[in-house]
Amino acid sequence: MCGIAGTVLRSGAGAPPHIEEALVALTHRGPDALAWHEAGAAAIGQTRLAIIDLVTGDPPITNEDGSVGVALNGEIYNFRALRDRLRTDGHELATTGDTEVIAHLAEELEPVALCRALDGMFAFAAHDSRHGRLVLGRDRFGKKPLYYWPGPDRFAFASELKALWTDPAVPRRLDEDAIAPYLAFGYVPTPRTFFEGVRSVPPGHVLVVEADGRVEVERYWEPPCAGANAEPLDLSLREAAAGVRTRLRDAVERRLVADVPVGAFLSGGVDSSAVVALMATLMDRPVNTFAIGFDAPDFLDERPYARTIARRFRTHHEEFVVRPDAVDLVERLVWHHDQPFGDSSALPTFLLSELTRRHVTVALAGDGGDELFAGYERFPAAVLLHRLGALPGGTAAMAGLGALAGPLPGGALRGRVGSAQRLLGRARAPMPDGFLSWVSYVPEPARSELLGGAADGWGLDHHRAVWRESEGADFLNRLLDLNLKTYLLDDLLPKVDRTSMAHGLEVRAPFLDTELASYALRLAPSLKTRGFRLKRVLKAAVDDLVPPALLHRRKRGFGIPVDRWFRSDLRAYVDATLGAPGARVREHLRGEALNGLLAEHASGARDHGHALWTLLTLEVFLRREGW
Image (cartoon, rainbow, N blue to C red; front, side, top):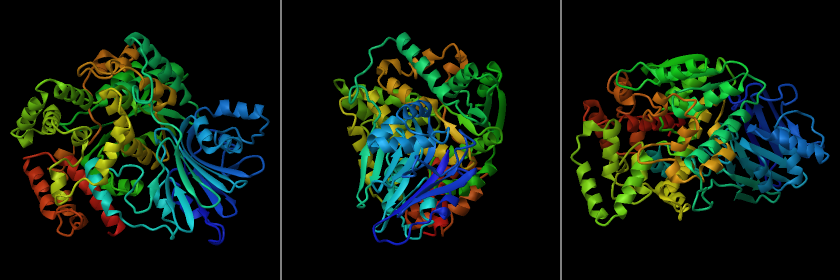
């Protein structure tokens, strides 16, 4: 795991670029080494977190004659097979790690074929001086970040935005149009960012900067969506469960390859428990596991569930408790994200990563299990409404349900009651608009009031465009596809990447293994949910590993108790930031609407904790940037 950065100057733009300052800005991602490769008007480099090949793997990495230089952030899991093939073809490799295989493959393969040959989590840059070409590739799900700026006299890229800005030629201009999508999603959807002209390479895409300065972005992979772009698998529950078990075990085994200590995040949920259980069967020593929880009487503490798995598999288990004073970390969270980020679970993930890094350098996690196997209650709820609307008289029934939502007391917006209220309130909304209303951090109508009646802008159009990509598939499969390309991509994966790399910790996600994901996404919807029984096939695949009490307990989120904290321990902090007359968000949003949210939440009339957290990180961002 590393940080990468580079610059390619246009013809006649000046001396070769120097990128040391950009790399220094990324040393938290790779504290073990820093170096770069220069070739004429191009320079690419990386900071290194040494995981594999501790002796010969430091940058810069090139092919035999130095004509191709490579910088890699991430891991290539099939690098050993690729090395064997390259050697058979006559290539001479100087290292025993994974970065060098990209340099040699780039000699033989065109950019799209190069990316398709790699299995892993990665963002890489390969500069080929023979063709004067820069190739940027990002992994299939977008586990590793990759930003770029195509300027008039140069092309710059980096793992994080802060590294781009070490070059004074790269502008740092706020994109006002990003605020509305941010309120809706809690992030700015890929490929756009909070900054004008700065973009993110989409997952499963390769970007090529040609010698004449042309920039081309091409897709090399997209998630299979059974019924849309892939044939569904016709399997029984038992057959499908056996296939999931085999592929999950293989995925875990691939992610145990390291020359440094490896551990695992453990929440006590099905996904992380399954990963830890399989690690225990594959390792010749006890697994190091790490959990985090809350001493909050009105909030679920998952540490007891994690201890159940830790005892069962005799792991070396460590725990951490999050307390309200941890909100002081919000400044650091915004610094590491470089943009506002609305998901409050970034805070416990940051602390969990800090605890974990004291003991190991690599941690496996259960991310992706809910996305592949339909682990959120909103999935079957949306299917239920979809089916109801298709029945004779369904439209009238939906109207009645929508009307029913209004009289529910505002203070009831908690747990399943709150979920039901959000669901019923948008019962007649077409997909994917209705689905967005259930996952928004700042829900309607508060969002509209804050924006002064303005629409959600391009963010909702983007959401609809992603939805249209899966036309022809089963409704549940379409929801999973939408979730993969939005929430997983721009919320869950950046959260884990930024909070773990803040501490130089590499987190690997077995569920997002290419083979496992491609298999799971083609399974019939009935194998994933039946009514509100979630993740059927995954639970069947690991029912001998995970105790029934954990296997069948209700899915809970990994947030922080913001509703209570913002009314008690942190009320003064919120009042001094968002409530201050000089709050920067008031220059972009309606102050009267913000005051209303604060007052309703403080009185207990409604729970606006997640909305206020979203606005709080926006406020910190605006203050930090001076806007």
